[in-house]
Image (cartoon, rainbow, N blue to C red; front, side, top):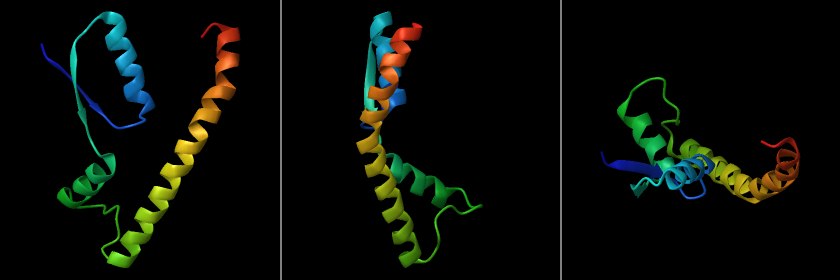
Length: 93
């Protein structure tokens, strides 16, 4: 059986899956996907309810807020991990 891991740069979920695959000694192929494009593709292919506005200006504003949220998450994720790691080490999780 051939395993394929669909990954997105910085994905904590894919990171956990890679750790399991490594621990189990399993081989896999990684395919990087752009999840922002996947959202847009799914919104266009499957009709309702629409997630993106039909107006180009409104759609650009949505994408601006998505980029802002992604940048904020990228900046704060290491801080969150750092604040949680000592507590998890103490509890044995």
